[in-house]
Image 1 (cartoon, one colour):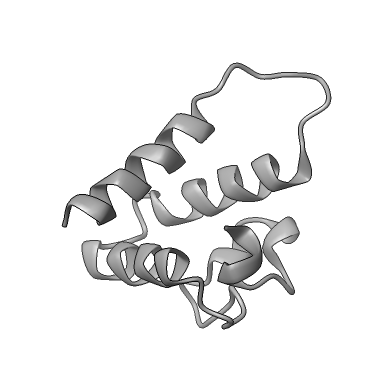
Image 2 (tube, helix red, strand yellow):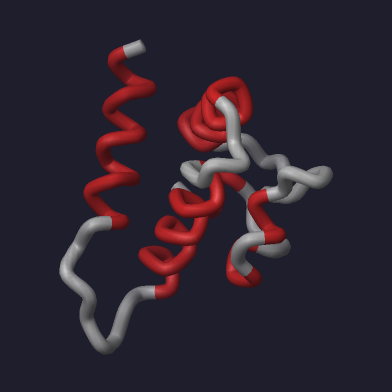
Length: 85
């Protein structure tokens, strides 16, 4: 549980960084991943599943059905959880 909360805290920290003009693509991808998972459309189970895949460095593509995170940000398409780490 502590590792899960630590990962969520890190994502939140990155998402709340002061905006800069030349953002790194990885920061943009992490921000979109965070926003896609922490919207009002998502429930606790889907958030937990996505964060656990990220923690485990899954080779699975970040995509899916109607609750897909790729529907939120085009920079997440064709990207694996492992690459997002």
